Length: 476
Image (cartoon, rainbow, N blue to C red; front, side, top):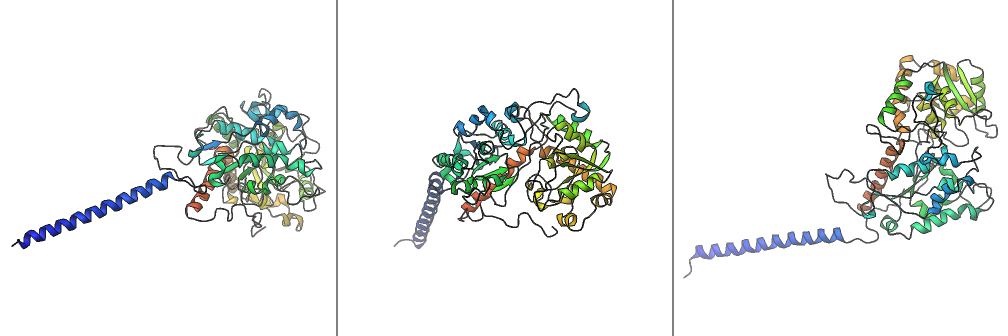
């Protein structure tokens, strides 16, 4: 007769063997599933990157799409045709120095500009400047499978400038059609159907938002093409659509190294200012809602204000503009032909506190670059207060306590590195410039879209929707 104790031990051993086998099988199944899911990718699958704490570029890799030269280099080689819509007889000099424009020799203006890092930069050259900065970006990759974002280096603003005034909609739209047709054939497009692609515009977004095929309407319809709607665009002025983002206009200051920024901030911090406020611009009598006429009238009627009439004086002369702003405490920034103005950034560069009259001029535009608390660095006077109530701007500004003015100016001075584009031939170690901040912003935006896809949600929901309340807030 068998010993019951032996039978019990044998039975227990069998149970333990079966249990060990079951655990091993489950672990092996999980391994196969993990291995399969990380090596199989359908067209709709988003690439997920393995976490590597030693890779400083993790989540920051950018792939530059090698688009045909007709979308960028051809325009630089034929820059003599890019003058339409500008006040320049020849745009070619402004394409020099990697898009920074002609260097301003500092011998005669050292008291105004300080260092040899100033250029006569044209506001429409942002696409060229950004592209050259991107070429020296530390986390570029030639392997698009590693990329968190795909940069499309099309000079769409320079391109459309040749045709905006052409009375042929097919001609206006042709280049945009050609670009998206080329992009959709590339394997990079099919991973997220373009939602990881972005491009830059040195013109306002509205130049690409023609809603009807009617000659009475302005611009091209590039941003309403289905493929283009899947991409994000960073422009000097965003539209009310969610996939358009505003980044700073280029100024004339392009620091090479940190010390250039420190020296400039120190100069501006100790600058003596003769005028309470200043306005550089021209009347807009043809714009019914414009308050420029009233602003100019108040400025001309006050010894505390300096007015530069851009209809007769050279407001694109950096030396002239900076000299005025450096001598003013505040700068008035009403809307012009569109919501935004390059003058915003020229004045901040000079340590001048901006005075805004509409939220669409800055607050709802440059969210990546400006503080959330607008009162830290600016003054807001609603349009209706000037237009309907004839508020005295001078009295409003004089009521601000001196200690608050000093604090605001210091915040403005801190903003300087964030709103300038550093020279692509140099490197800032201790500052993020406008390029760095814009790139971080779009990478975060694309990662948020990826996260939505990982959660099984439709990435198209809200991606390119129009926000009718973008340019408003309660006290406007």
